[in-house]
View 1 (cartoon, rainbow, N blue to C red):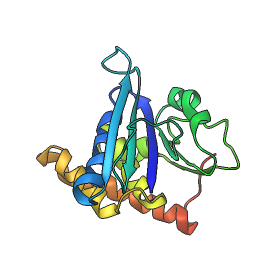
View 2: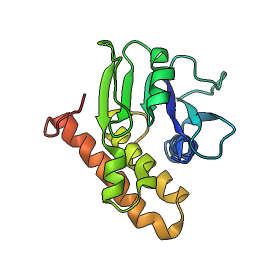
View 3: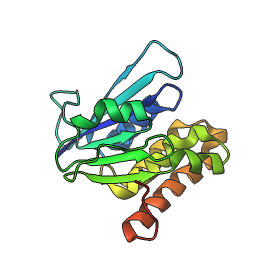
Length: 187
């Protein structure tokens, strides 16, 4: 099984780091194959950027995302620019604090989370990407949740591990609430 994932946002949100963590989780902890490519503008912060990840049980012959089955949007511009690429039957996930969805299609499974708000409540909005990874681990099967959390904790600075662990857990908990129907999705 091969999955193509597109993560979009803007510089400074940790979009590239998010792709790296996802690829690391697949290769180091799930014993699968993964590639990650990135795209970003000339701005150091604030410009659009994306991370493209391919995860497969078999060796990957083409490392680029053409028609993602999963799209994670952490900016309105990224959503608007890329949403048409999402495959029919794909999973669309967005940060409801930053993306006001307009064009959702019936053939997609759609989920959203106030990732930035949750990160701010935990003390640092820069952890919104980690909240998002926790959420992703709950709502779609890309890699094992424990593998993803291990990759997060291996990647972040040692003194921030506890906060990042809490951010991951908050996103995962919210995803579980969504799946059980206990939390309301914002549309």
